[in-house]
Amino acid sequence: MVRRVLVLVVTLSTLLLMVIANVGAAPAETETITVKDATESFPDVNPCTGAPGIVTVTYNGVFHITTLPNGTYHVTGTQAGTFTFEPDDPSQPSVTGRFTFWFGENSNQASFNGTFTFRVNGQGSDGSTVRFNGVAHVSVSATGATTAFEFGRCHS
Image 1 (cartoon, rainbow, N blue to C red):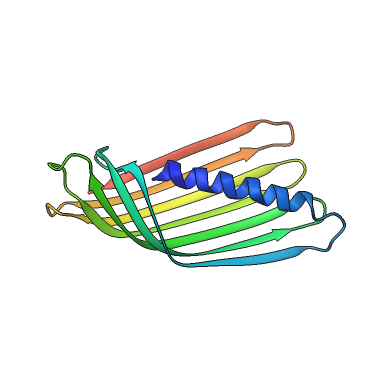
Image 2 (cartoon, rainbow, N blue to C red):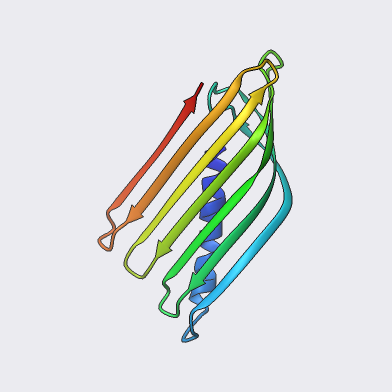
């Protein structure tokens, strides 16, 4: 699920860069995008067991974007909602619960940074608990040096 979210963020960032390329000498622009009751399904794994399956999420989200004429931008986004996880292997428990995802990015002509957080709280069909917290960060300096990390932890 974390990888899918990171792909979504990279896609949104690419679209944002296309918008930035067209702002020319315009003043700073801000935009807020609100998403309500969106539903998506995709293959993923239970972050605590590694069992593959299908995740279905229903969420609300809000995204704030500020772009400046010089190409600098700041964007943040939050998604929160419910999920179900149906494992490919019927001997594994299905899981239902809630999730929250947040990201923030800053970029200018010299550098870029982005941070992402992810939290899942769920209950397995067998009575198990799935609690996962994740964080990822990437920074690219003016010299092109890249620093990146991704951490995730399951709590029982």
